[in-house]
Amino acid sequence: MRLVLLGPPGSGKGTQATRLKDFLKVPHISTGDLLRGEVAAGTELGKQAKAVMDAGNLVSDEILLGMLESRLAQADVANGFILDGYPRNLAQADALGQLLQRIGQPMDAAVQLEVPTELLVERIAGRAKAEGRADDNPESVRKRLQVYEDSTAPVINFYKQQGRLTVVDGVGELDEVTDRLIKALAPAKA
Ligand code: B4P
Image (cartoon, rainbow, N blue to C red; front, side):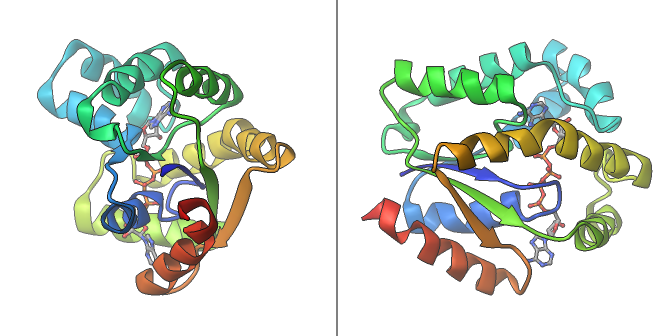
């Protein structure tokens, strides 16, 4: 199964991907986690990305595509993957389509987790308290939500127009949302 998980910051993409990977038996690839890994390791890429991420902006398409290409070249993605956090704009959606075609791994499903904005802000505020992530401060969160509206929402429409989008309600207990996702993915998994 090659799944692209879409949704605004705080919609539960990372949270649910962690759960779904056991069900689908494929790795969870989070571009946010890959970037945070680079920052933590103090690499040149991480140094470039940190300020951009902390401000709630998107890291350059070129860096992201390079990072994703090398991750998708690893052996564990042979049976598929859950992609979380990519694509985040139309250029990335286009690059992803070309990359998957080149490596012979076409996308099976694109799923959008839908959550109202007030709840997104509440969840991220909760994570800020619990984990202290550098980009979970109110100013950066406002920016991330704006970037989502401006750049990522068109990606949702792009997949919708292609008839490839499934929308799943992301409100509720973690198990409830996971169950909804599993039901929504059943046809693509079969
Ligand atoms: P990400 O790491 O993707 O961060 P995110 O959008 O906030 O989502 P995340 O997956 O972490 O959170 P989740 O919704 O699961 O990106 C961070 C930054 O990296 C970006 O701003 C950008 O700078 C950069 N970046 C990443 N990808 C990029 C790309 N492709 N191009 C350019 N730049 C890129 O969860 C949030 C919180 O909600 C958690 O605390 C969780 O516990 C809680 N939660 C989840 N589900 C819940 C539920 N059902 N009920 C209650 N709480 C819930």
